[in-house]
Amino acid sequence: MYSGCRLIIILKVIMAFDFLFNNMNGFANYNDFNMGVNNMNTPSASQKNGPPPASRKTLNSLPLVKVTADDLLEETNKECTICLDPQVHGSLAAKLPCGHLYHVQCLQEWLSLHCTCPVCKYELETDDSDYEAGRKARMRQRKLRCRKDELEKKSVMVLRDMARQFSVNTSNCVDKRDLIDALIASGKIEVVDGVPPIEYSKNDLSKMGVNELRNILVSFGLSTTGMIEKSELINRLIDSGRVVITSEMDHLQRGATDPSSPTPTTQPSRKSFSREHLSGLSVRELKNLMRENGVSFAGCVEKAEMIRALEISENVNVTET
Image (cartoon, rainbow, N blue to C red; front, top):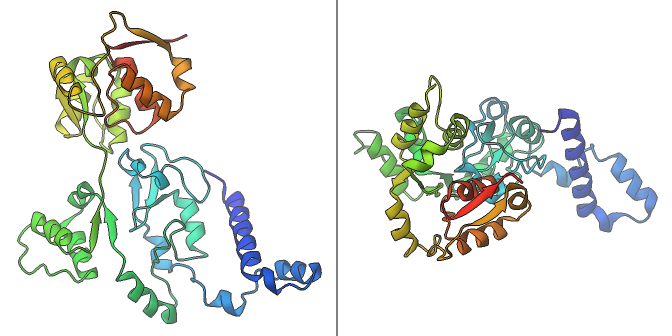
């Protein structure tokens, strides 16, 4: 993540370009332009009407999450669009109601200038009473975006607060499931997809090391606290519902019908690829290679996951060099 100083510089550059774009027709000569840039921090009439900073309450209560593979399924979440550094599985990030992820410090710096999401312009609460009336009216037309498993992880109190925020009738709700169903049925929430369950055979899992199993659990946002033995990690992964345990025969049968897992190659010997060669391929090239060799890429989001799927496949041989 960029340091606070570098982030401030980036934000000032963005403001400079925004100022130039909105005022380029108003400069008669270079001196006028230069004066405009020098006075950029002095709000003009049009700038005063722009989005104000987010409220202190908003800045102090940003929802924090651990980044999972589900979060990174959305292209705009693969990196923090403020500093352009990538998001990392298991790291802490701030997640806005619109579903977009940012590094915590980056978002705090941004929202101290503007109350809007940098990607979709979702507007957060401000301390500006004049601005709030219009913001609330506009935000009533926007939907909260989240996955179903995120709703299931929320407490009953939080779910009831969400229902009140979106004026959802919960008078007939008896338990947590009723609250979730009412929120979804209201149409006020857009339920987005997560990563589908990944298929592994027991043989695949047994070949993995402890660190690799931990990384898979972390990528799904699952805790590994207190787990030491490999068998504990495997059981946690299976119990999570995020993986489907299949037999080798299941792989072959599914490969005949699943478009993401075409019929395995009939060549008598396995093709060999070096890890270095695979690392140099693009995501598209890796997918094509997996298709050609009958290796499923279902559930693979990142390049490293595709390479790992090739490594544990019985259809190809991956060497170190």
